[in-house]
Image 1 (cartoon, rainbow, N blue to C red):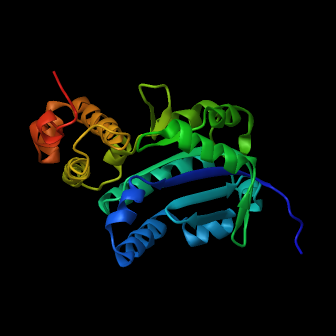
Image 2 (cartoon, rainbow, N blue to C red):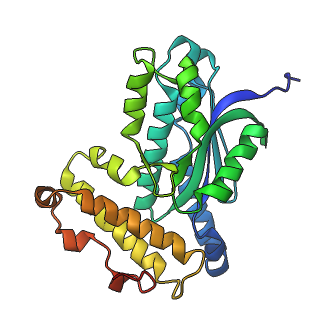
Length: 270
C-alpha cells in the first residue's frame, strides 16, 4: 500500500447554483444529463492532469479539482500553475454559462489527500468553508492566503516571471467585489477569449438571458433570488464599463445588453 500523505495543492471547490430546486422539478434523466455536462466541462485536461498531477472528484453537484504544487513536472517546468488554474476556472465558467449552468465556489492552497475516490484534509475543509460561508453569490472567490503564498512560493509562478509580473498576469483574470472578496472575473476576462467581438456580444446576451430566465422562478426576494440580484449587478457593471464604440463591435446596443428592473421584478431600482 502506498504511503498515505497529503499533497500541497491548489484546490478549487465549486457547485451548481440552484441544484436543490433542480432536483425537485427535474426528471432523473435531466439531472443525470446536467451532471454529465458539468463534469465534462469541469474536469482537467487529461494529458496535463497526468503531467502536473491534477486530480478531480465530484459528489452530486460538488466538484473538487487539485493541482499538486510539488509534482515532478512543476518542479522541473514552472509554467505558472496558479495562473493556469485560474484561467482554466475562467474557461469553465464561460463554457458552463453556454450550457446554462451557473456555479459558485472557492480557490485555496492547502494540504489535501485525493486518490481512489477518497478525499480529505485541512485544505479541503478550508475550501468548503470559503465556498459555503463567503462565496455566497454565484462567483468563484480566491482565498487571500493564495496571494500571500504567491509572494513566498516560487513554484506556483512561472520561472520567467518575478512576483510582480505574475501578479499582473493574474490581475487580468480577477477583480475585487464590493465586499472585498477577490473573484474570477469571467465576464471581463472572457472578452479576450473569443476570436470575434461579436461572439463576445452573443455571450453577454446569453448571460443576460440566463439570469432573467432563472430569476423568474423566484417571484419574491429570498436567499436564491438575492444571488441573481448580485449576478445582475455584476453583469451590468461589465456593460457599464464598455465604451460607446465597443457596442458597435459587439453588435448590440447598451440597452439590449443591460438588465433592467422590469426584467427582474425583485431587483428594485430608483
